[in-house]
Length: 442
Image (cartoon, rainbow, N blue to C red; front, side, top):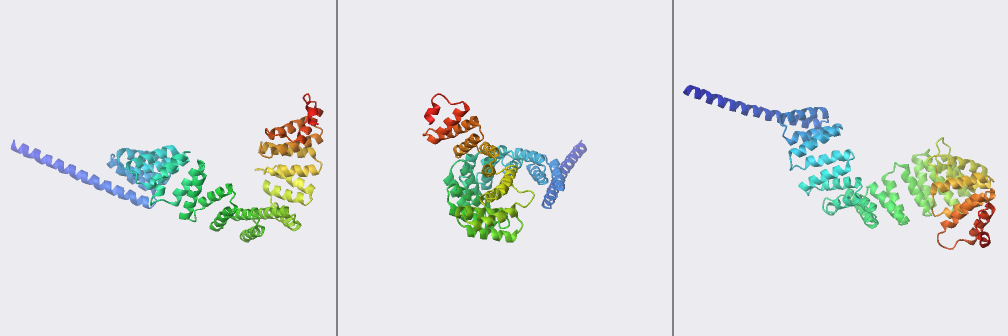
């Protein structure tokens, strides 16, 4: 009996020892697999990393770490659905861990599920509200989800702390802008630039705000800095030059574009801008030399096969001013057919067609312009002109409708007596005049 007891004891000890040894081996293998996965991930070998981490998951299915790491490997590989599953599992396995919740938010953001991403970031911050980077991610997710006020709330504390960044203030500026808080937006963009002078996006937004405030000098300052920061983009030089020209500084604008031509001597955008600058100068000063330079530059810009509507409109406008009406009409007619169409192509085409006595074409162009621009501040003038052309085309019915539109566009104030008389005459000729209208119009 004693021998039996001794044998049982020996077997029990042996079994316990085997269990310990087995567990030690599993722990060793688990650590080896984690290390192998980490090394593969550092070497950007996502497939090898996934295999190693999967082995670690099999050895310890209740451990958070290998699922988190495998999720990172899947994310690196671009398999976002698999990464999402692993991050969710990792978060469920460790209720106190912030990292899987943060990375879950990152994947949801990549999948453009912005509201769900924000919710994941919120759970991470609920565990540790000191994570400034997560506050920033939360604000971006909320902003992309269309919640600008929520983005402002998320950045209220971190943007004032020692870890505040230029990017935070830039995002705040966007959110303030979208909620109509223009002054706050301006201050945020200015802070962003003060912290990071090379932050191009913030300078662009600030320039737009200054433009709405008609602060031309400030706009020009920002555009010039942007051009210096982004020298390889022709568009920057063009925008600066046009801003200089709009401020009445023609010579500096020409110099700016001349410098751009030295870098890109065949770029039609530069010749278009140069033509526009010279044309504005010619119109402002009635300068023949400036007009000749405008025509030369715009002819060069319009010499390609894919000339845009804006270039053709500028060229036709210059030709029209030069008295080359027949050629201007041809160029402007083409401009009205190029998409995206410049609405002003219809305006100048109508002017050229009318001077050529092509009244029907002129009227159709103005009607097309009215369709494009709707009831803007020029509707009364445009409607009157269409009505006048209709009368010259012996179409009093159409004339009456457009004269009425012009009268209606004047609002509740007293209408122009000449306009009322023209309306009454058109109605009378069309047989539309109500009792007493013709007399009152006369």
